[in-house]
Length: 302
Image (spheres, rainbow, N blue to C red):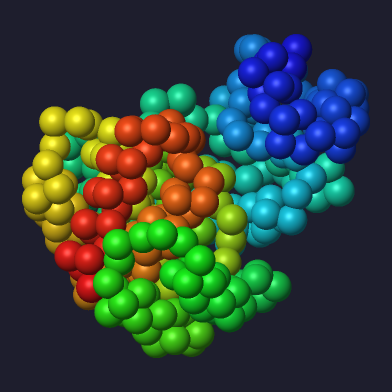
């Protein structure tokens, strides 16, 4: 029942712990189906870190690998109560499992996506409930990593570009609004639905700045544009500027804050790519081209 691609990636990422969890997973799902009185009515699906089992009543059982990054997903869904995100019906925190509203596998992409995503973020921007981790707690590690990468890596970013990224950490990251943010708000985590045209899935659940979510959305849009070899750097920047304006207008989030968060994320991505590569650009000329375009964004938006 476990999709082979999901099993392979889980073992590659988690090693022996992943193998042990996969061995228990069919029993976990079966127990949840019995306990919540559910009937499976479709094949298992999967994302990066969990499986999704369709059940009768337009719902799904989601079981994620037990990782700290997945702890607060049900807290976020519970706080939203279906406002802009899928509804949460049941939760089993010990097993990292939830019973959720079913959505379609179609993700948000194409023309108008920034406006749609911005309207959705406006719904998701609510006061943060107690108990969520704060994004501001990452400020020191982000600051130190930027200095370390800038010193160790061979890169063309001017000193003022790194200084601007450090300024974002100091001025925007260390003190953030008391709002709940999705934490991984990109087009693949916005799915077609029935109750609303689009709903968010897979939140991390942080206390932080909604402009960070906006910047994450633009980062993913930019990466998809990077893979289009026909686009020049200047054309890419024009696309991103238009989408930033559309997102800001639809979401009500300040466009200048979005730009500054995006600049920080671009510098971080530039360094990350040089150290690790990216999912669809691990090395060679493709990685070189993607990193060069990221550098252009980091410089132009500084």
